[in-house]
Image (cartoon, rainbow, N blue to C red; front, side, top):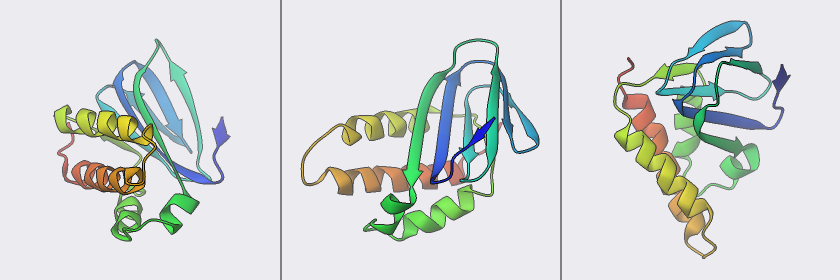
Length: 131
């Protein structure tokens, strides 16, 4: 078990099985699933096989320097959720892929694009029906 003191973590798993423990809550790894881990939360994994997916780490400094203050409000709403089991993953998967690609870019507009994609991802997660 460990905790992260300085960032919010979003974990999207498209494959894998086992359990993810967040504080005292046991969550089944039943993809497609998104886990949200707030800073200071204790968490650990008991996995049966190798998972596949994406992890986004959002540091406080990113939020503080963000051009879009609505991102902070969306993160606050998602921080109330620990696990979100998804029915439809096409849009979510695509947004994670685009964020990964954009984050690797080194041009003056990358930060703006990352913020826009992140905002879209957070909003889509909030409106997703869970399985």
